Amino acid sequence: MSLSSIARHTLLSVFALISVFPFYTVILSSFASFDAITKKKVYLIPTSFVLTNYTTILSEDQFFHSLAVTLFITVVGVAINMFLSVTGAYALSKKNLPGRNLFLTLIIFTMFFNGGLIPWYLLVKDLGLIDNVFAMILPVAINTFYLIIMKNYFNTLPEGLEESAKMDGANDLYILVKIILPISAPFMATFALFYAVERWNEWYNSLLFIHSPSKAPLQILLRELLINFNTDIGSIGAAIRDSKSIYVQGVQMASVVITSLPIIIMYPFLQKHFASGIMVGSLKE
Image 1 (tube, rainbow, N blue to C red):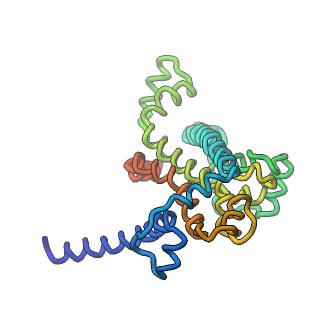
Image 2: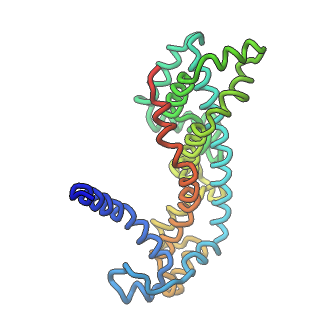
Image 3: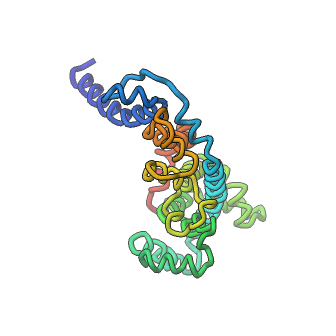
């Protein structure tokens, strides 16, 4: 192995360690005990392994309720996201669509300009979505960037596929469901995961539009744990105040691990589709 190759691999290894180190400290702290932290100013090597931080979170009733809300937002939200994005992109990929250029111009315009926060809030309010779970789904039903990439991808598919299907009497809906989607499964899986990450991490719309704690997603509960750990946050706050055996930062880190774990598990299975999917969709017409 050449000297330049050794230097390159060493540099990349250092960058990898720098990237992994925050995750390492988060996981390490989530299993740390109060005594282990107080005895060591720098906690890099595990000296304790306790599940108190996790059991403290899981014993909170609001956690599982917020988890159910987040699961609903993710499942229903991704279904709506993919339905509107795929059908919209497929329609816009048709060069004979009346007003196609106008529609594309208006859609692209929204990528660079918007009405601002106040008009957006008033619109959601007029739609009757304030303090409604769908306020975290419908206002973000389509990602314009994903829509454009999908449209460009559909433009790269051979026209002969649709022409032969239409000769056999198939309509556009049948062609999309039975022909286009099956051959585009890896590409669709990529964007389904992108949407799933966005819906799973939903907190901003909840912060703006949701008032009832019973409708708050998991990320809002996590935010409360991270910001308000010195205040009363249900049984978690009481446990922290009444017992020094519970490590406050450990509870915070445990909540980070719990909320991040599903996405971390999903990524390796779909990672191989990311580069090819994005590159194909980025081709020009």
